Each structure stands twice: as structure tokens, then as C-alpha cells.
Length: 482
RNA sequence: GUCCCCAUCGUCUAGCUCGGUCCAGGACACCGCCCUUUCACGGCGGCGACGGGGGUUCGAAUCCCCCUGGGGACGCCA
Image 1 (cartoon, protein in one colour):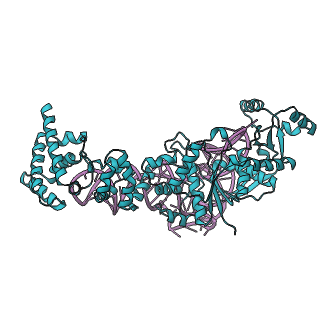
Image 2: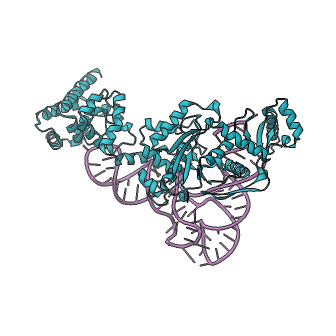
Image 3: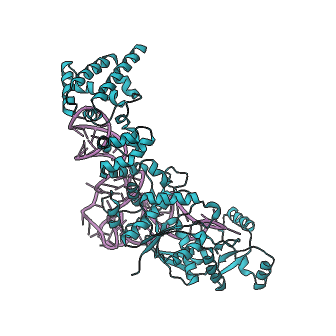
């Protein structure tokens, strides 16, 4: 059996769309699972809507996801001569013909059909033209497009996902393969490229199903072998429509900034419209490659759920070592101005301990910063609901006293910290929690977080005591002002 | 209007190929309880689905038909 070759063929008219990303993932997994090749091809036949920036952005996103390609990127815009040859073949073999109808004329016909609630298909006006008519129009400089003459009879193929697919030729209109400016169109170019690039397996969204029939028509007309084709269910938004560019989740490139791990995104997206057919769902990339089988693709469309993707992300965060996470979040911390690069480098061990403490409760990487800023700086503010509850005159006294006791501790570690607090609580006859809550708020500015004594130990004696005393002053000022 | 596709918890899905083991399993979310200094994690439990109707059969989520619902495609876009 010859080598498996798959491809992803994004159009650079926008960022990497989540649907395209999923298609890329499936093609990549398929190729990697079978030891085949994965090829990147940029479909930029529509020059007006394509840009270099988008090409770069798409490549970056693909790389970020870890979807490395073996060949490419190939650019369709650079291959025009090639297409021209095949167009010529189509014409001379009588499988295509020139159409001189103008866009305006067609628009009128289309609108009329819609008004009458009737089916619209090109009426083959120009198929009826004689050789002389055609030559005359060409000589007169009339512009024309080239249409495939769709034969009657069935077009069929065996879809890798949906099984037997059939469509009647009479239901397919004579579609255009070449613009009146000579530039070939998508459905045609795809066929030529897939053939020239020896693509063996085409996996794409089922919004391409009808295109597949047209493309098979072209393969047949040119006498080219038809590759295997498979259509994947679409990814929907919460309104159950094909996810559009406007959706928040639409740009795969945003996931990185939002603190998602690429393997979590790949894992989650791979589970949309595909499943290993058992109860497992969290996979490493290698496991995914190993277990992937296109036979397990689903047929029905799937709704994208960012909440579940977060769950996948937190699971993958747990799989990472502290060092790996630290490396990933360091730039974010520096950029947010929470801590300096120098500080992070010189206190790397401390940084990793912080990661360890926060790891279990992080959904996205930015959680480490949002929920752990106080490990690097004293709190600038105190959570309001905690202030209301904890910051009163009585607790100021208690905090002051506890700070004094903590100052006398020779070992500022978990157990002595706990013991000292418990002891004081017993003396003033309150439960430990009564002291714990205001202390947490004073030191972290927050009402929730990791175990108090672990974080006190980590932040360290001097800083903890200073923060507690700062809070005491804050409370007293606040109380006076009330 | 035409053509194509799909149909299990709110969502992602297992089960459907080879009908009984399914008064339908898992996951996310949600709700309790436990653990506990908080939140979270973890553990335990709960809520929650075979769209409807006909067949076939001793027996259907599983097979067939119809209906309904949903989606996609009908561009000189990709």
C-alpha cells in the first residue's frame, strides 16, 4: 500500500478557524497514526481576500498546536500555469464549456428563481452556443468563465465517515471552474492540487459534502484517480449553527493567550465529532495518535463547549511538571508586571513551589497569575466581601497579636505556624478558623486559596509579618473612618 | 425552492455493525454529603436522554417505513 498523504488547506482570509483547526488535527492524527505525511497548502486563489499576515498567523497557530507538516506550505497562487493546462484539457475533451453570461445576468435569474420559490440552476444558455458564436464572442473580446458540463447519471463515492454517498447529476448545476479573468476557482484547483500532491485521503468538514461530488466530476472528466474522502461533522456554537468567525471560540489563535495548553486544545477538539469509543477522554498527544481511527468518527454535529475545554485544560495542567508550567507562565508574569524576569530567575525554586500550590486549582494558565499574584507582591487591595466580614477592630487586635507571636517563631514552617495559631485560638477561646480567615485576607488579599500555613511558609516570615501589620493599620484607619 | 446529511441526558459521548447482558454507561456542568481553616482537589451520591408514530420480532435505543426536528450546500468565496 502506498504512503498515506493527507493535507490541511486553509484559506488565508482570516485567523485559524476552530473548524479548520479540528480538521487539521484529524488529518494530522490520521497521517501520524498511519506513518503518512501531512501537507500544508494555502488556498489563496482568491487574492482579494488573502493576506500574508493571515498566512503567518495560521502557520503560527498550527505550530502552536503542535501540528507539524511534512511538506509545504504550498501556495495555490504560485501554481497558475499548472491549472491552465488542466482547464485546457477539460475544454478540449468537451467536459467544460465557455459561458459568456455576465454576473449581472445571472444574478437576475437567481433572484427571480428565489422570488418564485423555485430551484435555481444555471440554465445552460451558453452550452447551446455554436462554434462560430463562441469564436465571434471571443474575437469581440467578450469575457467568459468556464463551466463544467455536468453529465447525467449518478455520482457516488464511499465516504470514510458517512458511508455510501450518491447524488444525481441532474441536481448539480454546471459550476464554474475558471473566472472570467482566467483565474481558476476552488473546486477545480483543489482537485488538481490534491492530484499533483498525491493526496490519498481527504478529510474535511461536511460543509464540503456537495463540493466533493463536484470534485469527483472533475477527477472523472480528467481521468484522474479519486482519493479517499471523508467528511467530519461540523462544530457548532451554542445556538447550534456552524461556528462563525464572530464566535468567541472561533479563533484557535486566541486559545494560547487565554491560557490553554496546546495539547489540551488538540485533545478537546479531537473529541468533537470523534471518540475512542470507550470511557477515556483525557489523552496525551502520543496516546491520541496511537488510538486514533477514522472509523470512530461521529456523524452528528457537535457543540463547542469552552467549559469542558477548560476541564481538559486543567487535566493537562496536572500532567505537567512544575518546571514546565513555571516556564510557560513566567513570560505571562513578567508581562503582567507581577514580577521581574530577574526575580523569577533568582527565585526559581520558590516559583516552582508556588506552582505546586496552585496547580490543582488552575483551569487555565492565567489562573496562576490571577490567583497567585500575592506570592510575588503584597496585595494592593483586599477582597471586598472579605473586608466586610473580617476586617473589624476586634480582628485587628487579633492580627496584631498573632503577628507578634509569629515574629517570635524560630522555624517559620507549616507545623509551628499552625501550632502557634491554634494555641492563640485556644487562649482567646475561638475556633482556629476565626483567626485563619482574617490572616489569609491580610496576607493574600483574597478569601480563598491554598492551605494557609503552606502559603505562609512559602511567602516567608518577614513578608508575612509585614503584611499582617499593614493590614492592621489598614483596618484601624478604615474603622476610624466609619 | 432543490439536493445532501444527521437524530441517546443541557453539552460531549458509549451502546446501534452481530436486537435480549440497557428500567441505557461515562464525562462536563449543576445539586447534595464527606474530607477540611476557605475555595479548590479528592471521595460518595443525586438530577438528567433513546424526538413522535407505525411496523418486523417472543423481545428494539439497536432493523424497516413515515412524520417531525435540526444542520449543511446550492457564488466568477474557500
